[in-house]
Length: 451
Image (tube, rainbow, N blue to C red; front, side, top):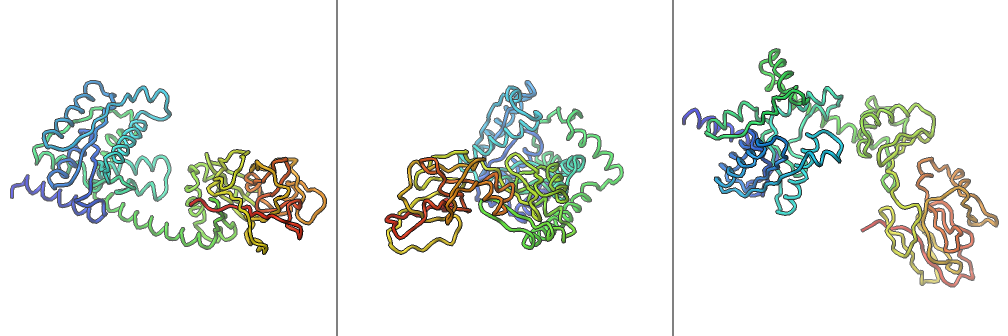
């Protein structure tokens, strides 16, 4: 075996072991390879081709580098045709899109690229999307995350597999990739913009990492070992947080989590527990720091994300998604509402078994007028609570039932067609609709989960 053959054999064995150990995909799976024409994606192209994988390629021409962008597209097209591999190519007017979008041109291009790949995967039934991220990319990502502030997840770097995105070269160095291509006698395209240090990642690649390699010539092998240790630490942390949440949290439907502050603070790593919950509700790093701070604040303090809130209510932190439901809804039976179905059903039996749930009620229909309305309560709303003669403000009912500020913001009432309130949902039913010996027709009101 020649030296070239040994290089090819060793690298392909290394990639194959990584694919198998990380359970990235199987030989029979249908794969879409995202290819730029650069060394990484071209190396992955030849690996997939030489090892008889079922794959096609996709290329985005972002039209950002003039004639070089056209040459990249031409190179990819010829590579596919020469090797009889199906290919997809799309031209994107990236600069025009940037004019109406937020973010850097690099991030916009990245999002456009992955959107295109995902659309192709759905249209052509590709099971996985493979990209050419390598160990050098991992190191650059971790350093970049470190400069911006991060935890174990950021130091862990890029995942080898996330949903249908796979990265088979993630433990292969740039040097190994170029040696592999040279051994194959294969060409690739060089993106000269990678030499421009005006971009953060390029600055790290071209300036920072070479200086670190002066300190430790074995930087990449050392980094690979460190990543393995960090991955174990991350798994241990996630397990500890998961077990701790069993002690200090409760989940209320729909989509609400309560954390008992006293139990929460019994764990030295309680801030990490808060992070794990807050991330699921869409809070950013800065917003999560606000949540940590309101633990010591007075009851009623709120932190908000784009679609959720965290409220300190007495001895609890309450996380809840912000209601997106209309403030006023005309209801018919079986009307979808807030991930549940509102229902009205006639009760045929003379025997009435009253519901145990506070989200179901049985009423007399004689005073019922359609259309009904389900809406957020408002100041001035009144209801005649069951067993009382006079009316009572809904605001007073919410105080009496110790309803938190967050729950108040999402408290719904059911309004009769004549404008009177039938039900403060989950709290009080109107005395005007109570069941008596004279009741002839009864109906059950309530909510069922969406199927």
